Length: 378
Image (cartoon, rainbow, N blue to C red):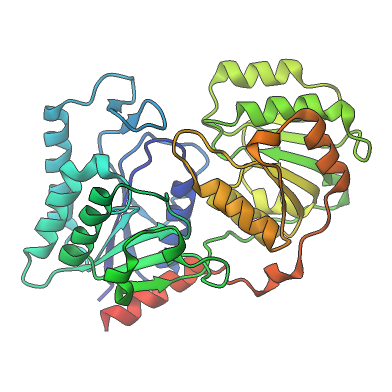
């Protein structure tokens, strides 16, 4: 009998983890699972859900990176009554699907704002005579310096509810205990899947070559990088044209139009690139933030890379990842304190090809995840 997976995915601010989760879902589908993707955020363009069972909850988001309040898609406050309705809808979905595997993306180490529905969901799952395999799906670098109370809370959730913690990374690059506190209490449950990176879906000939590709992932906080790139363009000596900037689907329309107005001749502005790896393979230099998926695309494509880590709010993940990439010889990092048009232009003129160390990394996490889960189900 086909095993059923209920995969809970909630994006509140930024969409990087949604790409990773969707790729994992497709990996599970390829491995023969029936995948029910429970989508808790706003609908996003450009995602391939072919072959997946998609279930939309009432969308919820947050106003900024502080995650201080939950909102409806239209900006209205998400009330306690709204939370109760969403919780009941999620529990009804669980009862209908009766999954063999329940996966929560980020929780219990993130998405604390969703405890109102996730804790009841986990309680419902554990109450069954034969509970599903309960799995947490997390990236390889987590938010550091969490409060002791939050570490204790997440560890208690792991002990009470979770069978596996899937770390979507290569431990030869970084081990999860370097950024996630408290792992010593559940080390036996940790499995490394390898990095979840996509393969190119199409090929590009020489006529499609891009000299410099500037990207900002979803684009929710990418305006500063793109405007700096526009100002750097006249200072670059090596590549005077053949630039492409992709703003991401989450960049506000007014910011998108401002970037288009300020773009000089020689720079193409687009909203979205469906097959980023294919374009990066025909790119000389990538300029980007250092989120999980962006770096994964760069690693898979093999182009030279300049990373400008996003450090808004309490974020430490991107800075840590960029430091690792530079230390490994895979990319050049420009620290946020040093990021300027002149310094970016100089980096573009000086950047070297990536280190061969990258060839040893495990980048097949989407297909190794179901192998790990199947082994636990036996």
